[in-house]
Length: 142
Image (cartoon, rainbow, N blue to C red; front, side):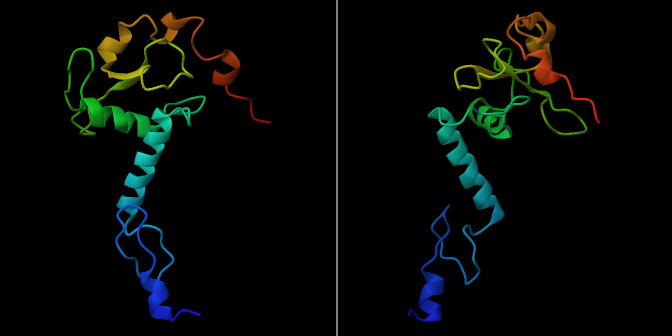
């Protein structure tokens, strides 16, 4: 049986390799855990192991990745004005081919609301490629 002190120092952070204390932690900080999970998710998404979202939305990790890659600006016109209340640039994640389920890296981009409204796959103009009505419609409460 190992002495208690030797066992405590053998565990290191999954994100940075820093030695952890005696508590049963996997990461040194919550920020390190989130960053490591983000990098792992993006790696799996780019390899095609995960879809990048669910039926109704695109993963926030993908939005963060697009902002990290191209900056917090419209990929079409370069608009980057910040909202006075939220401090964020209001950008939409656009599916280039119009298929809501295709969240592959080559099919998603960030667009400002104006540029997004001018695409042929925007909301009602995307007839036939969008979400099936049964998925969008909420089920009535019973």
